[in-house]
Every structure is written in C-alpha cells, then in structure tokens.
Image (cartoon, rainbow, N blue to C red; front, side, top):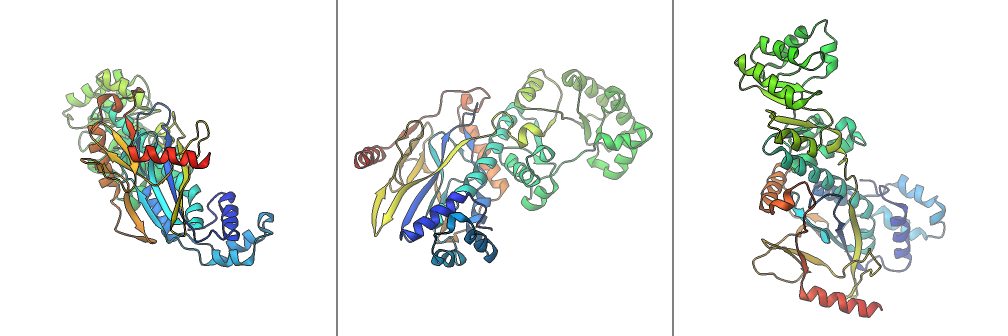
Length: 437
C-alpha cells in the first residue's frame, strides 16, 4: 500500500517529528464522529477491513522516496528521514468499533496507538475509508427501513464517483441491509449476492419485444427478470405473462409505479404467475420508497442506484482524526482542542453501550452491564484475528438497529440518543483545560 496515498502535510509533519526527535514518542489518535450527517439519527460503521489492509501493508518504495526528496518542502530534511521511510512499517495498535455498529455524535469509531509518525501518516486514508463506507451503509439502512420488509438491491456503480467507489459502496450497502448488489466484483471479492436483469438496449437490439423476452428466458431460465417498460408497460407485462414460467419477475423503471405495479400484478396473477416478483428501479430514494410502500403498491424489490451509491442527500460527514494523548518517556501528556465548534476530548476513550444510552469514558474504566464497543484489532503491528465478513457485519447492524427506539430508526430527525461522559472523563477534561490554559 503506497505511503503517498495521503495529504502532503502528513508527510511534512512526519519529517518535522523526525527532525525534532519525536519519532519514537508513542501517540494516541482517535477517529471520531464529530457530527452526524444531515438528516441522520445514527451512523452505521463500515470500512474497517480496508483500514486494516492499509495499515498492515503501508510502505514507501524507492520511487516514492525519490519523489519526496525532490519536493521543495523537503529540501531542508536530513537524509536520515528518508532512510527511516525506506524501512517504514506500522508497528502500532488499532482499536475499532465492529462494522455494523450504530454510532452517535461525539463517539470515536477507532483509535490508533503507535509511534507518532506511524500514527500520523494514516490519517488521510483512514478518514476516507471509514467516512465513505459508513455514509453508504447508513443510507442503505434508511432505505431498508423505508422498504418495510421489501428487499433493497444496490445498483449504483455506474453513478458512483469512481469504479472502485462503486465496489466499496456495494459492500457498505450490504452491511446496511441490502440484499445484494449488481456489482460483480463486489460479489467475488466479498461473497455478497449479485442481482441483474437486462437493460433497455437488450430489448431494443431485437426487432420485437417478444423475441427479446424469449431469448432472455432461454438464457437465464429461473433467474429471468423481464424489463417491461421499453415500449408499453402493460403490453410488456402481457407478453412476459404469455411466455409463462420460468420467470423470477419483471422490472418497472418508469411511469406511475403504484398504478402500474397493481395492474402488472393482476396480469401476472391471472396468468398463474403468482410467485413472480415485481422489481422497481428508476431514481429511487428512501422517501420515494416509503411513498410507494405506504400506497400499498405490490412491489417486492427495489433496485436503487445513484442516491445509494453517493448518499445523495448527505454526501459528507463530520469525521475527524485527532491526537488525544502522547507518551513521553512513560509519562502521559493529554491533549485536546478547546476551539469553538471544533473542540476535542483528551485521553484514550471507550464507548460503553447501555440499553438506553451510551457512556463515553476513559479507556481503562469499567461500566457495569455495558458493552465496550472499541475492540482490539491490530496489536504490535499484527492482526490479532481475522475480521468478521460482510454478512456478519450485516447481521450485527440489523440486530443493533432493531434495538433502537422507533424514532431513531425513522427517516425524520429525532431527539438524539443520550451520550454521557463518565465522571473520570469529565475530570480529565477539566484538568487538561487547566493545564493548557
């Protein structure tokens, strides 16, 4: 994993740490959720395996080091720093909240404890990996909630910001509760179910609609999903029904979905195709899905693209990566910002989850009856055990979301879940404020 996949200032600061003799100082950084995204009551954590892979494989090649040597920002840096980079490896610890866990504003998603330079350089990558996938997993959870039991399938790679973003968005959407994805690489890489129908180009490539349906059925057999709105939706439904089984279902991509779904359901049922499903696609979001469901449309499955793969209504999130303590020759110095609207809390912390609230405390504290959410993932530069797969993370998310109050699960902004500070943490905050004054 290239060491240059980071912001320049991470590297210039690292050079400065080295020149100042700070390279061996142990530092603790926390990646925290400063603010919830717009219109969200919680965030589903996703993206941990990509962070782990990055830390375990972080390297600087000779070519990369030569590039840095040639930058004017490094003109005054000693050769010893570049020698240091040539042997750079992450030797520290990573603690993280398991994927699929709902978090709330002010809570840490992961903690990195390592020699100062090793902890500083990963900031850019870790923020990017966790923020993006968590946004998509959270968006998916909203759509699953809106679907009220109807399946949601992720169809968004073609609208994602890059092809690789599409792969990771599909993975995150699955963790958030989607049944699967249209992205074949995501299916291979992460063992996630894949879904596919046919495009309008398939129908248009034949001289008539019936021939296109017949050939698709011959190709796909029981997996056949006929796209029936290329010309006339109801006539398309009649032609699909005329062909009969095998027919997994039909797809509607345009028009008055509620009215058409009812009419298409009648056509299929009258042809004896009661088990055939109706899938709906076409610029969907959670509000549209909720409306279709509340109107009682007989839709079995929603395929969602653009809004899901980009978290269209909330494409950013206030995550931050901040230094919270430094160990200097065995003595801890706690650090915090007290600037307006951008303050941070000192010291390594733990989230204690109780049925009705969360308690943010110091890492060495105990909280009776609570689940400690931040768990060890990497110790001494080594992965301590294989990470749970996406299916396990999906199950964790579903179970955790089901335990939330109905208001927090809903699509409207609700009063926030209480996140309290322990007495020990509040005392540390006050002591740190006095020391820094």
